[in-house]
Length: 190
Image (cartoon, rainbow, N blue to C red; front, side):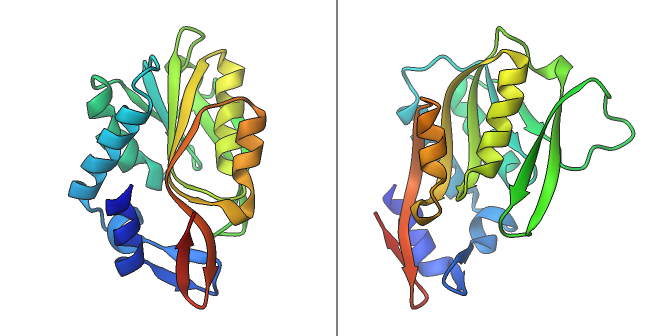
């Protein structure tokens, strides 16, 4: 997706040639025009799939998933919580995920009332690197018996090999900007 690649080239900040900060348009401040184009592109790429729900993980995936849901007939968006409050139903699916950027492991949870075996779920997330977050979401969906329609990723870092884990599961994976490497503070797309 050229619009996204251009935005990464001009607005992303590179940290230590391994972390891509996109806070100014994707993770902290949100570029809604860009998000609308991302939603349309996910709809185009998954147009042959039935989608009854979109699932993501808090926090950065939520806004992207909500905008994308408009293009999938306003299906519900369900997000896995990293920090379940006292008011969260205790009957949950849960999985462990490791955050590369925070260097921390989380237990993610989704209430069982929001996923069922009849659901056909599209996973949407902001980044794919090692694949831990996506594998955690896949685990939650497997626990629920829901069918996975595919996984849509905004930015993928191929040099961290998460794609391989997802492809081994036979899941359609669509990444809108695929980064092959980061060198000398510059992003190189596949």
